[in-house]
Length: 354
Image (cartoon, rainbow, N blue to C red; front, top):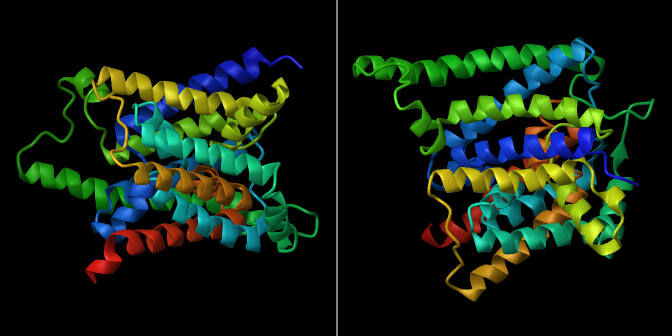
């Protein structure tokens, strides 16, 4: 089976490059976003995650009403959602990065993230196709609950698209007022320009992006990704896990049908982050000083891989893409990803200090 270059390879690769560039410029990583809430009492990245979800939610609902996309929320299997989500959250702290954070940091030259990515890809592959599959399958099959017609459970049932639109609009307005507008008012009191477009190229390519700019950019990419992915036969927004599983399957079997839209997306993320890091002069091959760190990151990657397949999605598939669809499965998985992150962050960084 030949790879469809026009529908699958080129769109997935281009969107991945754009996504990777944005991730690197915005330092967008959910491990940092959730961990920093309890560790540093810092909410900047968490605000970016929240706004990204709302922008995506608004975009998905509008495209759904326009008939451009068909909403495709993930299934609800509470056993897989809880166990997989919790283990994924624990793993991303050990790996020092979530699925997207680990992927884009490979493009920055971070060898620890590369080791974690190997563990992530391997753990996901062996859970999808290998020795760990019976565990994931048991957790999913024995706890799966669907609508009478077999469709996935969502928060508001048939009214979900309407509530996506309402929540998206109201949420963006609330964030705009309480966080963005207040920042602008503070600038005004200090007699600073509200919007400074001087040195635009330098700020775009060499400085870190504002959390809101990063969020809006990723939300827009997610909308284009949904359309492109659907055209390629995948019909889901952004994702990471399936891409690395696809490459692993290709390397192990040589079957090019494993190379779908998502496989080119993840390669694009690495390329985009590399381009961004090179332009900003932030690329540098960095290896962890201690072998123990490498082992821990690899174990964290394995845990993320197992958790992502068991929970039917990583932080991107469940939180960034599943939350906007108001999928009950994704909401439950995402909640336990956050809990797992907090648990491991507490045990690693806070427990002995208390």
